[in-house]
Structure formats: structure tokens, C-alpha cells
Length: 172
Image (cartoon, rainbow, N blue to C red; front, side, top):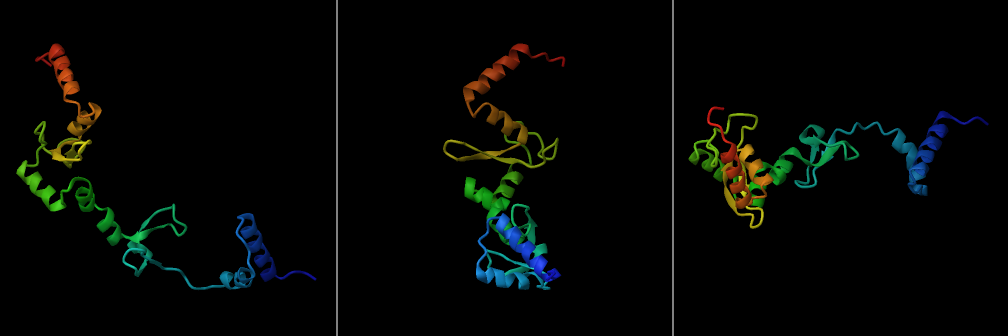
């Protein structure tokens, strides 16, 4: 007796589950038919932080999740992982305090005094001691990388300055 299309589809789904080494329980076998013909279009996702159903547009796309969207909605994500919480969590500085410091420094790097809007990077970054995590000030990305490459070692920076003085040509 020939198999129907429904039987073939059910067998294909069960074979796929077996290939993925998913246990095929009797309940699952009964529900396979229902799963195939569910006509409900999935348009919402449950946010695990605010515990509400929201449309997919309210979520950040992330291919690591089965449905292609991050587990938190955008609003919750930015509250937890946004710049303000990052500054507060890591340096003890809120976004408001950061903005006040930028204004106090006249939007200039604390080290080289270049404008924050010049060059490739437009934001001043939070400089901090990597040992004590103590906040030191706002500096440009270039100065931050120079400090990082010198491993925050003043002696290395002095040697670099001496090296530059030795070969410095004011004509260039």
C-alpha cells in the first residue's frame, strides 16, 4: 500500500530528529503531525528580563540563537549592557558624570589635549588603572593605545620619550 504525503513528511521529520539524536518519545511522535500543520505565524518573542512578549523588531538579531534573535529585548539589553551600565560597572562613573567630565575637559584629551572630534575616533575613552581599576580621566584613543602598549609603565614611557628626544628633528 503506498504511503501518503503526510506519512512521508512524518517519517522525514522523525528521521531528521533521529539523525540529530533527539529522543523521539511517543508524545513527540503524536505531535509531529500537529507541528507540521501549525499555521500560527511566530511574530513575538519572550524577553527573559522584563518577562513580556514583544515583536521580533524589539530584539537584536543574533545568529547564535535558534530563532535568530537575542534573548533580551533592545530596551532591556541597553539597560543591562549599555554604555552607562558599562561605565558604572567597570569604572564607577555614570554616563552623566562622563558627560560632565567631557565638558570640564573642553572635549579635549587629558594627555595630548587634542579635540575629541578630530581623527578617526570621536569619543574620549575612560582611562583607568588596570591594577586598581581606579578611574584616571578621559583620554583619546591614540593616547589610550600608547598607554596600553607601554603596559601603563611610566619607566617605559620615559624611555620612549628619551628615545624620541634623541632622534627628534624640529624641521620635520
